[in-house]
Length: 402
Ligand code: SOE
Image 1: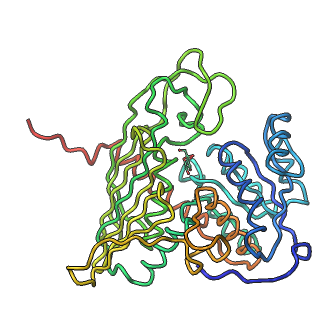
Image 2 (image 1 turned 90 degrees about the vertical axis):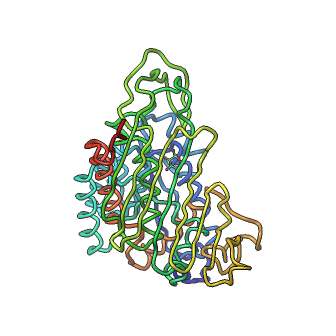
Image 3 (image 1 turned 180 degrees about the vertical axis):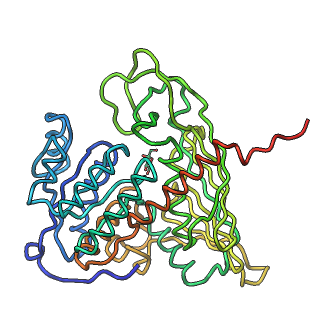
């Protein structure tokens, strides 16, 4: 990650970047925090303005706009996109509307930030990546919201891999464990419906770890072999609005149409092997994204539940002194941290959205290709599709002989 261009200009003199956001639930709240905070922490080349928030329910979207600091509210995303006082459209809706909104926004000349997974199908993601590439030629940028690239510790890990500190990679081991579906009475919210979410743990959590693994390894997966499972196939229907990962009580039941858990192995083009586990049934694990990379010269390990730390083993150390050591990732020369608190004071989950906004504002102002691009989102989508295909064929599953 390059250092930001310091402008030292008064905020008022900076050209505004007027953001219109669609969706205001969990991710919309997180992105709002990012947009609201970023210009106060980082010295940016443009000044983000929270211009308009969009959602279907007029009363609820107005209340959310007031709560999160958006200047106006819209109830139709087409009207939002048609506004000429919006420069960038931020899409925080479920996956079934990503492609339609992103394609319309790009066609209307807007920059776009789209939550992960990029789309619900490879065909949608291909259309989005094509449109983003054409829009880039016209000076627009499009980024997909894989926010875990922007934890300072994961950004540092990427830097260390790129510096060659691990040498040739042998293993990438990743898990993303949550437990909010353990209760079979948890209602059938949109995240459990294929027509809205595209897939279950795979698209929601698996997308993050596929992106992070490929990003840290610096290469793409060439193939996968997978098992998926839906443990609870019928759940109570939710009544009324759902928010975040919670929902209120229910009347009747409906079918779960997505995976509850996905386990897969993968092979990188270089020959490195990877393993992945994405589940919402890891009782006691709340948001445990863990990744370990083992290379010929060393290893790195990260755990999102201890996100200010990165563990590093330098294989060149004499055996008597060698071992994983903790790097407390809070120094000013660690990624993003020159703008934050003194060493040791630490950051959290929401700061990843501030960093995402920071990097996107720089890409817009500098006309650079933002990362992760829609092409990166498409590559993740292809991996997810390969996982589903492998799981359907049961190609990984060799029954143990009796
Ligand atoms: C729910 O599983 C969820 O909110 C994901 O949708 C997010 O992408 C992840 O960051 C946290 O968990």
